[in-house]
Length: 228
Image 1 (tube, one colour):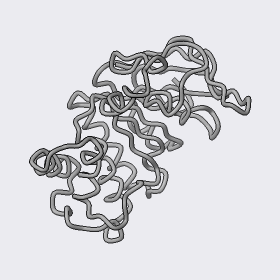
Image 2 (image 1 turned 120 degrees about the horizontal axis):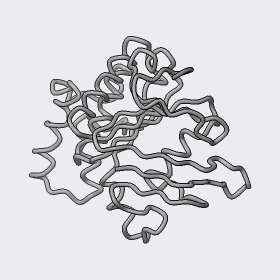
Image 3 (image 1 turned 60 degrees about the horizontal axis):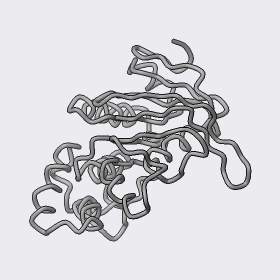
Image 4 (image 1 turned 90 degrees about the vertical axis):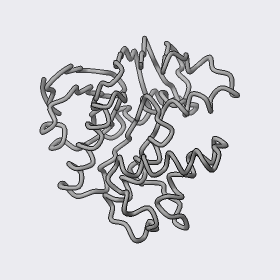
């Protein structure tokens, strides 16, 4: 589902963000990306939805070589990849339902399609009863659930989450991570970039550790934040 081979990334200012990345993540797998700020987590995730293109190496996502995609095909790639961010990125003047539907609006979905898919996505994240609530009426955890519902509404095979619990308290962080793990159990490939040592150690899933843009450890199963 995700394959990276010999991948490097150098930004226009000369900063090297990633070096010699080899990584393969299977369909339905749940994996953490861990490392200090500046270790390359967000850069790696950005390559997977074509925010950046690799300076060297190959990045294959859902069968597509992201570096060779013509610009016109980038929206098709992004329909295959849902993305969740730390800051939620909800539209403040739209309800939860409308925020989730917005992801379908940009794809030109029909009204019938939206009315079918949006309630399913909100139910999946446990917010079926909050569809008419505006962001200011929701807790931090509920806002993140809306952003996850929005990322999932088009049923992408891959879900990327960049520090999804960074603004949440420990109990809510655990609930959100459990939700992401449950989504993986349904067959979606889930990759979570995080600083949250407690969550990683408690989950005991695959852990890919980045240091200065390189993978220094890949604990395939039962990994912890600091050790194998």
